[in-house]
Length: 90
Image 1 (cartoon, rainbow, N blue to C red):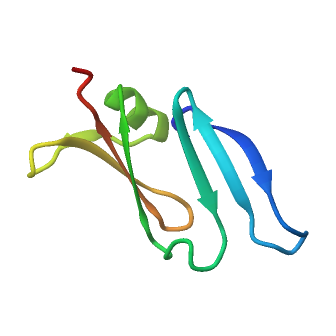
Image 2 (image 1 turned 120 degrees about the vertical axis):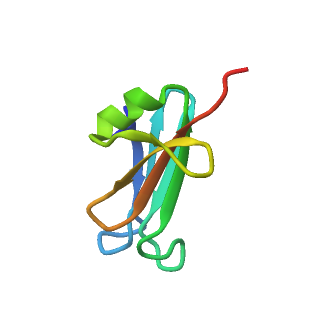
C-alpha cells in the first residue's frame, strides 16, 4: 500500500504477536499486534507529497473536506481507517 515495503518482522516466539517495520523512501511505520499498543478500528493519518498518486494506489478518490483539506479515506481489512493528505512542500 502506498509503495511501502516490509523492512523487518519480529516475534519473541512463534505464538507471540507480530511487530513489523515498513518503509517507503523516507517514511517509516512500525505496526504492532501487541495487546494495548492500539485499539481496534483505529486511525492512521498519513501526509504524503503526492496525494492523487497515493489515493490512486489504494483505489480511493481524494476529495476536499469541509475543513478545507483535500484527503483520501480508506479502510483496511481489519476495519482500521487510513486518512491520506498532502503536505505543502514549501
